[in-house]
Length: 450
Picture 1: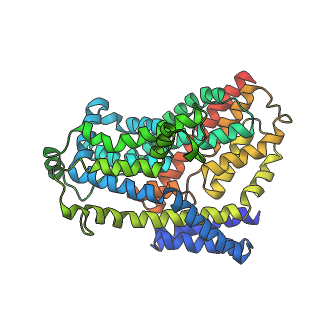
Picture 2: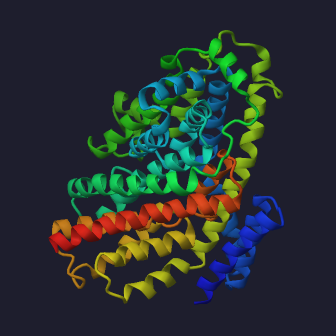
Picture 3: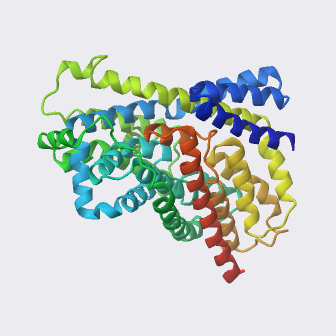
């Protein structure tokens, strides 16, 4: 009970420090993470190890992706390519359907691509679309984030659902047949919430860029097709790699011993390699490459300066999540909920408690599945459909809620001009709506088939 109370106090402290005291989020996260570890009674060496592990693993996993994504975005914005691409999407989808379009694009992209990477790749397009359509960045950014999260947590071949299906011995095909419609229904409900409660709060997508400047950039911008190349070539490379793993039966570990072609595909499909290729392709966008673009005060220099703050805050979020994880709070919550039989709501609540406590959706999926596995027969989840329902229910729970201990929360809020208070009001509430909508849909299916 003490650890749960400490978690609630920690969240309140982060909000107070960043919103009221105006402390930089990096400092606030580090102070709260260390304070939680000390008050939770963690050994001092374990706290230090958690800080190193959380910061290192988080930036080791997505640090380069963030940097490369920001560089691609800088070239797209400064050449006008992002606006040319936005114009094309606007003509197809229409102004009123931009949030829907971004949500669906995010959903598709996140099936093979991690949500963090997907958001980094699509953020320039989303920002430009919002600017051209005259929409608040709040609505379109959260729509994109929820589309990414819906597929990331509920649709294989993303790692979390695959691992959960393995632990629970669920058929992947059945999980897909359930996960696809359930995640889309939940995303639809979430988009309605975003339209009503999030999009009404205006955040200027590009306050430093006037409409006249947008038109000036469009006049010299590359075509929409060429502008899409730095975004979609990395996505395609990562998708092909995922297909080789999930369908081709290849292992992503130790692919150096594979034949030349699959070995090359695996290498090019590594996210940071794919985005490096995207950066090289972005060099095709300017009409003429100039030395100043690559200087410390030019496009590259400004991109790296902008990425630094995102990296620090994302790493600090990883520290907070790792300290929570190593404090054993997931086990405490798991044991408390495991003794309550709530049919299909049990795996959802179990995963939601673990996700909220430690931040990682993938960890929540794996932990909740490992807790549920020995109880499946006792809870009468015995058929193939039952097992698939439990996997998707755990996935729905692993979306609830995204807040300060989740690196994705910081990627979305930092790139969308939101402070912490706005992030909780928009990102956290939207993730709650997404997960609860998915769980309710699953419960209705469960009532029919049980």
